Amino acid sequence: MPNQPKNSHKQSPATNIVADNRWLILSVVFLLMLYLLAPVLTPFLTAAVLAYMCDPLVDKLSILGYKRYQFGRTTATVLVMMGLVGVITLLLLIIIPLLQKESQLIIERLPDFITNIRTTAEPWLQKHFGISLAIDSTQIQDVITKNWKTAGSILGDVLKTAGSNSMALVGIIANILLLPVVLFYLLRDWDELTAGIGNLIPRHVIGKTTEIAQEIDQMLAEFLRGQFTVMIIMSVFYAAGLWLTGLDMALPIGIIAGLLGFIPYLGPAIGLGLALLVGVLHFTSLGQLIPVLLVFGIGQLIESNFITPKLVGDRIGLHPVVVIFALLAGGQLFGFAGVLLALPVTAAIAVGLRHTKDNYLDSDAYLK
Image (cartoon, rainbow, N blue to C red; front, side):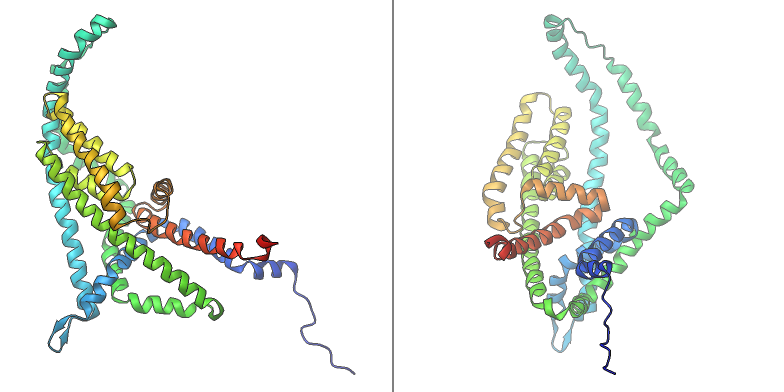
């Protein structure tokens, strides 16, 4: 009898569909799990982004040393993390005390500001529109004073709320404590982890995958390095400029405006809004706000026409509207970690779409 052919049965259509679209299915499942596990993944995602940004510095420090002694990867990781904690602590020590001090001054000056508005604006409104501003500055002062004296009870309310939601508090504390631990291991083992992921990529696509990954890495590295430099320069510029105008809270507002500069238009707008709010309550006339407006106007002119094109250019290749949407969407989905991930993920998607477009333009489907 003739031999029967092996595996003569045919695969079902469903099996063929799954096999043909396995990468798409795996991607959808991965994104779904990422969304569902967002609260748990937040410290891991944040640590991964920070590890990516700090890895070049660890690489450089790890080969330094004295005579035959080298720092090594572990020592370099500890030094970089200490520096990172030091920078964050310094920013908090600068911003928080000044905000607390100046917020109290603003609350104390608010009744006088309302009185000035009533004195200057009420006669004009009464003459032209018959409107009278029924504002009692003394009553406002009493309300503010009473609330300011009872502000200490806020901590008690927070503690009570934390007690009634102990699991949420435990989760927040666990995430905070987990972040440096995950960051340490990721930084120390970054090269081994990336090499291990590379070994899992199918060999028939390893060339193209490596090309795309290198393109993404180069683009992000240049963008992050340039954007970080722009943020520092603009923080110094805004802080110095606002200080010269005599504005209260010049240092924290300048730092906030500079650090938020990675958000096109929205970051400087937030800084300008804070500066105008403080200026209105601090200065005695609206004319004194003109120098504040000039600082932000000149800052935006210099940044958009000279600093950003020189240091950042069009390295990420994304429209400002896309950047804003990506940051807001990332924050909505994954919180702070989503904001950190927004631009890298969007840039990676942009690179993938660019290669897909090039392949399509060279394909028979387009040329025929």
